[in-house]
Length: 382
Length: 141
Image 1 (tube, chains in turn brown, purple):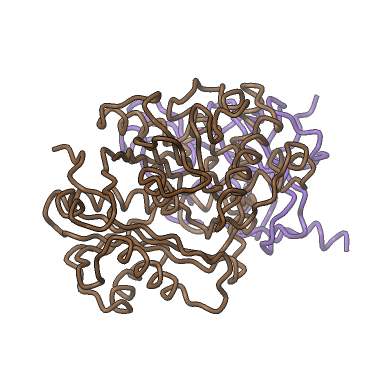
Image 2 (cartoon, chains in turn yellow, blue; image 1 turned 90 degrees about the horizontal axis):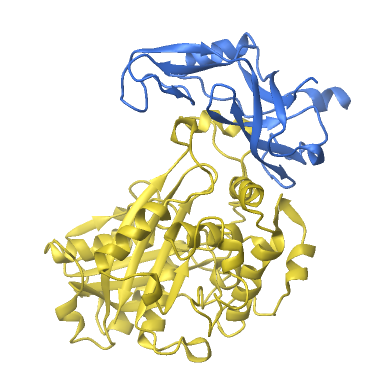
């Protein structure tokens, strides 16, 4: 059974705050829910499916209680930053199967005001595989840096090439009034920023902000009667990769498994996309993900992102909102990939609008490139 | 002060039913990986079955202790207790002569001198009287 065009994104909302010490996590989620339901022209009483991540093991039940919801379908799949991309696909499948009618996907986080050192804190040391990692001082930045160093060694990728990703993304953020960092930067600025874990500099890393967002997914049929132009889910695929018992090629991402499947299921290919949202926890994440998805050959990511190719007006504009590098990153960014893609497909992006945007690719990465991570790919279209 | 710095304050790996033989060997300053007797796969990290075919029939393979740096990073910032005072330190994957890669630290050298492909050999740090962790240092010429 194909789920192509069976479900649509009917409402989206990105919480405007990047610093919210005066709010609770659930409050950010409730405000985001209100925003996305308003956007769709629906009410909280219409919701029959609830999806979230980042709320702990059984937190989704507490969240349902806080919102006074009794959903027919619950899913708190937690696969890192890509969770919400995965939720979008799961919601579409649940809707196609008749398990729920209106799915609400929620995210809220205060990792910045809670001072959670997600990038440079330590790892666990308990269950395998962590007992073979935590004693060596892995950090999120360090885990990604391992992949970057090997990529540079094997393919000659340079820090200047990776910096171009941060520079382009910042240019996009300068056109997004909600983005946290809007002042333009240069390649030299990136290289001059302090090294956090070699070869990654501070400006190769995403920020940690507070924030949240919400998505409303419903059947294509119902979406056509709602307030906004429906954005259809054409296909999806998921994957995960890990140390593979000691034999993994660290320069491959899970995207290599999910990306081609998603494209094949939608019956589209790389050159058909008008834009892409590529999870940018770090510049290297974008480089390796673009390669793994097949937008360029393996090893050519560094060259691919040069000369405006991934900028607005280029061959494949990516992360038009400014991404995690410049707009927001409350710890898990997947939901914002879908929100921005939907806004682009609706033509609501103002100064940063991609012209005639009809087909968008989203790819979320959750976890770390160096140890283990998930990948969730979505093809969205109008 | 110098003594204080030498004292290991790494997080202590939790030894469990699957990994006990590995950690017991490490405590004797010996490095082992596993080899499946059914399919021949050599694997790391240790577990109670072969991750290729789930066979419980495996042998412990004593490693030469030699390998080369597959990739590394010089970590300059880590807020966690065991590492706050260790920066800059080198985290790396070392490819063992037995063919598998393991996460580790490269020690006993200037972090800036570490390169991919560099020959290294195992050394052990005693974290507790019962638990020692395998680290690597530049191989003797």
